[in-house]
Length: 419
Image (cartoon, rainbow, N blue to C red; front, side):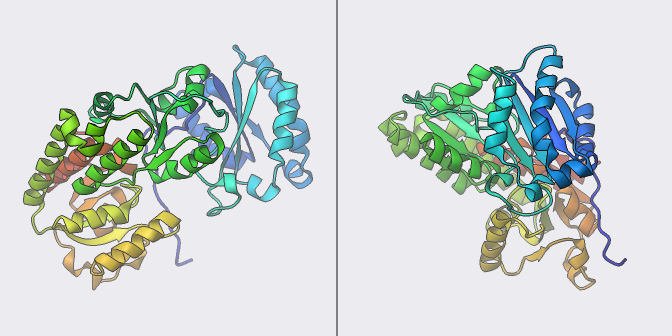
């Protein structure tokens, strides 16, 4: 075998699933498919919130699991110390091929456990796309929200697996604009608090993960939505805020002053932008002419990050990113149009001796790019590391400058570097 590839895990990274508050999650899958989820549940110390229903080969071949699941869920609800408000079924991998009748199953399950809501989501690492609800890392998490006749002046952030960083300017800016609350399913503590998400004036998608969910919320709940592309470009981040001010103004939440000149209406926003601009300039001076490579492990938008760096004057030579997702293909085409000199690699296996000629002293953004080029300087960043708003832009460029000076850095603010 000449094409064996693998990727090592990053044990230092805490990874978790979004959950509806006061819910219990039941994975429904063959044992081999559930192993990694079970290990993660144990690593995260969350075993009380998760259970597993393993499918046998006969279950898969005959479809018996649909008939048996109501009994399984009823038994689970009876055994739990506290009766959950919600039971979330997570079908893993094989369901794309089985074609579970979700609507009929939910009706049977809610009849088996009166007073308990049933949600269904799927994990699909086997194929790209698939059935409509199979795609989307947060699919199903918002399905229990119901349309509201009246909406308040809060905003819902969609597409994050955690709360906003404490250093972010976003909450202070929203407060200055008149937004009463910034809501996020990851920070909800009760089911009733979760249901109030649907009362928000606007849903803001802050990553490609949330874009699909926002489209569904718009169709199902008639909730206006806005998408922010993950960006490390100061001008584009300012445009993000301007678009948000316009959308909130249309909903009667933000006044004309904030809509006309967003930064003038909030000193927090103005100071955050100035910090991001200073960090960019300091990074430019620290990195100088050194070559830079970016990978898709570091950021959800590697091609956009490479373009932002190249536009800002950095010597970007490569992007290491599998072009399998539609969003990445779009970014790859745009980068090829604007910066054809930048190499676009699916993996290190595309490299050859000639391609390595300009990589001496390379600074890598992400573990894949560091390994690919044997970089001695690297920014330790994983899936954008919570970077958000101008604070995220500043933290990234501050980490880039530290890596150039000290060899390794992290956007989390330490200098431990890559594991």
